[in-house]
Image (tube, rainbow, N blue to C red; front, side, top):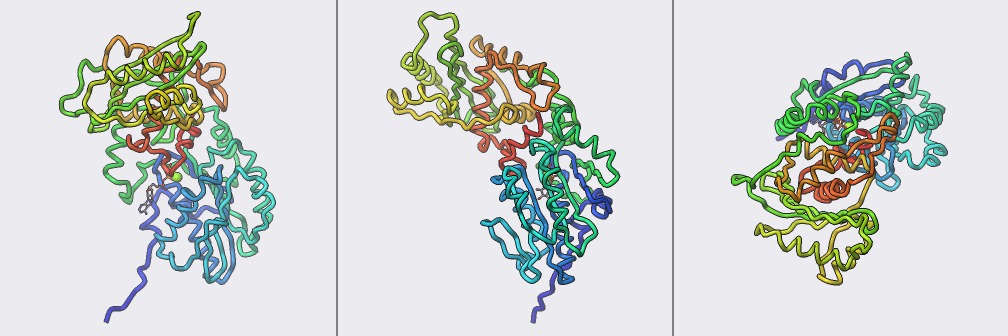
Length: 452
Ligand SMILES: Nc1ncnc2c1ncn2[C@@H]1O[C@H](COP(=O)(O)OP(=O)(O)OP(=O)(O)O)[C@@H](O)[C@H]1O
Ligand SMILES: [Mg+2]
């Protein structure tokens, strides 16, 4: 006869010793900041579940509210994170899971986790959830400002459960590298607040050996190739922006292709302009080991030309540029700025060739895809005369000094056509290139929102 025994789980086996103090702090406001993969989210989710479980076992009905900046990010982040914690504590069957409305309910006590997006302040403000014991702002740096905390905290604190002394408010985030980002200024204020416990963690705090070897090896490549980027991303340091967007040492010139790492596909990427802006098409090879090599550049500038090329002139030129790439490997994606309708239509009309419109996001987010490739040491270019414009434009790509000391820095938008085309390539091929779209899905918006 087999006897089913419920495995007992010790929290100390799941939560790194680094977080002991944070776990048991008496403070009402608890901030976990730090580098990527330092167990902030896992620890908070386990803590929230433990808090709810403790009350539920006493027969109390209590509620926990989890908030992200955006409703669309909830399911893949906080909701998934709470499910993960429930799973880790072997409590899966004790809960009922619903996505619409987004809620995870403890069946026997009726206690629940609620999930909200900060983009719907009316839902936050007008909600009537009673018996609140905790609130969690995940990826807090992605909120537009601290205003949402100021507006939302009082609402939920008013609805405190009678079974607890205070509503615990948790925040977790990765510090943006811009010292002027609102959250970096906000944290300085919180440091003065005696009600606030602040923890700073990095992946190096992993005494339980949870981080996988492969992940550690990847982190080492970042560290070797771009120490500043590593310091920011993995050590959570506020390294500042500098004025150059990219570290040019990370664009490696080549006189010939690698014999031991052949091309496996060629991708094309277009940034187009018609009146004064140039039109460029990059032919980019991807190798078996995931290197990215700029093979050739098409570039046409209409500036100072009295008779400018029309889409019907540009498209055949780009088509023959494509056809001249004789590398005997399949074509990957053809990517173009989604706002560029004229060339796309012309390509379909003339050649039945469909170019994929890339979904653009904010500048900083897009830049991060490229920065991530660079920091992994994967970017090369054939050192030919045609490709020099690509290098020159990347060199000249700068943060606008006037905005660099602000919460919302901008790049100087001049002669950045090959730069934009390269960003489109990186975004459109992110999955295949293994660029994390979000450490927790979709936040890549996150990476750069918080990064720049
Ligand atoms: N006890 C555990 N057992 C197994 N895996 C774990 C455990 N704790 C955390 N992890 C995993 O470790 C990884 C990193 O943890 P987590 O996402 O909590 O870090 P983070 O500090 O929130 O990272 P980020 O800064 O990227 O948001 C996650 O994939 C998580 O699932
Ligand atoms: Mg996290």
